[in-house]
Length: 595
Figure 1 (cartoon, rainbow, N blue to C red):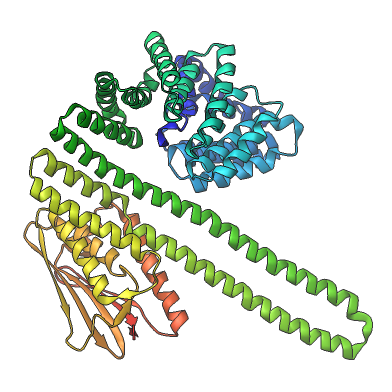
Figure 2 (cartoon, rainbow, N blue to C red):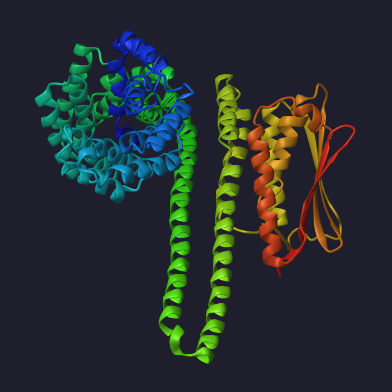
């Protein structure tokens, strides 16, 4: 159902193309404007509204909007402040795919506008964006709350759009009758203003929902009406989604030839767009089409491709889960801090009331308040520490599920399939699936057996070794006095350093690289060593690729060890040694026995 998500927001940019001359003229006016007043802010806002969606990949838009925000704040101009926050949210949400950061900006924009009647027309756009984030994050109740509030906003001049979003929410929740009801309401509004693009998009989704609800004839009729509009008005932006939905509708109506036609053409058109959820749906439908035709060979090939892509989307869903945890974590942290402040204010109030009861009583109260203050400070520090633990756990989970690694692995599997090397593809896929499964299983655990962690690292290094065409060998040595089945370690604690060694050290060598992993004990501490003969940190520093990932992996691991030190009162640390050839990392951890 992921393909039901609206694309109408992005399509607004298509109507701006004819405005280039006007935009050039407006840009000249802004450049030659001498005074930074509210008119100047309005000109900048007008320019951004028309130009930003034409060039969403332009990295300068954030700085442009931040400057507008700063000028608006200096002028104490609420309209400029609120719109700037909303634009910054759009950049984070849509252009950079960072919904959590986008939501923070939208909320600041809403806070600026919500209590001013004259700004209600801007509230419509802000609440729509907030609702769409909740929809993407699968927070369906919150999304419905935002969208239904918009239905009662008198400034909402496009209520059919809001009804369309509500229908999408019910479609995602599999509440098909409610989805059909709101799609039909949205359709009435779109037909009143006679916008073929909106009508076709609504009918594409409505036809699929009607079919899934068992209304096969109605679904087929609605879908054909959508396809006719797309052909008549040449609405290219809708064609991929519509073809994917049409393939499923025709398949359920037992029209195999048309189902194959639309599924195949959807995949062809999608090559330029690379919309993964739409491609995944088309592959699933096409596999069923081949199966119905008795073409079992193509059915199997297509189904395997669908499974690989589906697994990558499952990992994308894991990222959504992380984002939801971040939102909840921030809310819990704010609540804890607020509660501490409430307690402090209560203490101050009580002091004022009782303060006149006498010197002795005041001394007693002062002592009590001192103790309470100490307890409040202690609680505050504990809350901050718990917040740091939660934040580090989230970041550690993210670092283990590296999107670049996932998609590079899938590309490698795809190459083997294209080369008809089924054995290599099967081996690679088996190792990759095992690594993903074990990583997700262990992501909620604070500690696992050393033997389990070593197994994870072996699988990871096998995959990387295969991906880099055997450019390096690795060995794992465990001291004889260590019982790997009785020692607990934080999961994947060495993975960021191994990844750095492979990508930034060994893969850059001309000759065969060597990676050594060693586990031993020193002074009642477990020493975990990563030793490579790569090009070294100094030479690698000239290559800035993935520098953020390198520093992030180091920072996350340091935070994990700091938390272990605080919880267990130990002195674990990380030591980096630059060798003549390569780098050595020593990670010291307290020895923790399972039993």
